Amino acid sequence: MSNDLAQLVMERCNALGAISEEEGRLTRRSLTPAMRAAHNLVSGWMRAAGMTVHEDNVGNMVGSYPADRLAARTLIIGSHLDTVRDAGKYDGVLGVLVGLAAVERLHQTDRRLPFGIEVVAFTDEEGLRFPACLGSRAMVGSFDLVALNLPDADEVTLAEAIRAFGGDPDLVAQDVRRSQDLLGYLEVHIEQGPTLERAGLPVGVVSAITGFSRTNLAFIGVAGHAGTVPMTMRHDALCAAAEFVLAVEAHARSVPGLVSTVGELSISPGARNVIPGAATLSLDLRHQDEHERLAGQADLHWRAEEIASTRGLSLRWDVAHGQAAVPMAPDLRERLAAAIVAAGHPPTELPSGAGHDAAVMAGLTDAAMLFVRCKGGVSHNPAESVTVEDVAVAIDVVGRFLDGMA
Image (cartoon, rainbow, N blue to C red; front, side, top):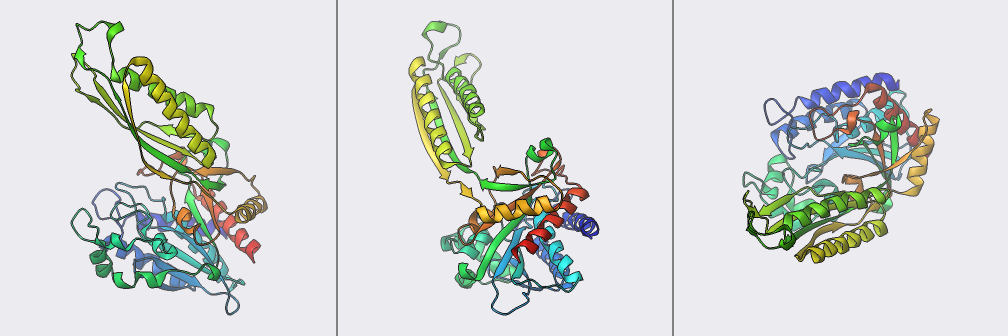
């Protein structure tokens, strides 16, 4: 049964992959006509699986499958249908459709569980049009109403977009869920990395969604003539930046689980015959353990100071943004691992280096994530790829997880 449903999921991913705002590539922003077409398609599949469907006031689509008793709590299985620009077909979409497939398997035998199930397609997880994780924040109650006045690239405000989509921005607060009504939250997602593929495993349990620190820094030296200033008398900002970039790489390789990236580098004045007088860099640092993240940030700050001092430069260091790691619920992680074993596969845990709605939902209820192997770890790219066999494993694992929750 899982194999048939997996093939159906793949066909549905293809169908949704054809719904785009742009010719020749997949771009589907939240609260747009393309998203309305996607909602219409998925809501039809939900109803055919015995679910009732509604949208809340920020455009979250919720398919509800009833429990076998009254006053039961609800397990939410969620992800998103919005995409980045020039996207692949599986990021977000796979999680919604695997959740739907798990409900379809129950519906095929007219089976109910002692808890209700909601399959939720959240609004604007990617943040391409409006603030990221907009839909899950509205459900949790952490949505900032000031965001209703934010415009998109076409100067359409979020409030206007919500109204055009059929919601009411004045009623967003009414859609906040109560934690006592919920059993938990599960999100299925492609890994977006190469770890499972390298391990030869179809699925894995997410241990935590990593915290991150984003820093802007600059080495300030002295610009000078490339031909007249001796090497021993230079205060070259680019050389300091280069030394720091390599120090970042070496440091991250020495700390298990740490990933650090210098993704931006600009040089001033930027002439071929002038010694660089300033080098401005970005630093992105991530770890699932808060102690390791903060320690790594402090270590690299100290290293940057040392490099600047040794070379006779000054340093500017500005932590622009940071977010704490979000551990997934231990009980749900254990249940997912047991479901993987029952499905005939070895369990493994790995962190998520990317953000997800699960990180927001963890503020409301116990949350867990199941990663599915993707080819080459490629994501946010048309080359994004999963196999029908791995999708079948994911459906089987989710089904066994639901049985275990019963």
